[in-house]
Length: 90
Image (tube, rainbow, N blue to C red):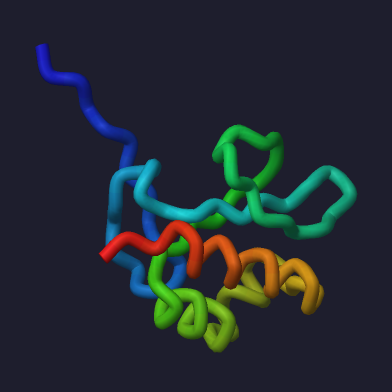
């Protein structure tokens, strides 16, 4: 029996990828957004490819703000960019 990998959709490029290949941003119960390196934090999660272009596209996408109420503080955005730089796979 083959184990199925959970797929998630990147909010930047809208392609589906295995969950482990994406970065997760989660909305906490306090209604704030933060980077979730474990992928197991409670709350509503968004997934982004490990690609700076997808992050830029996701931040420019107005539907993202309207649909999810997505707004990162500058220090949270810096943390996410560092995660992209440190974990980006070629």
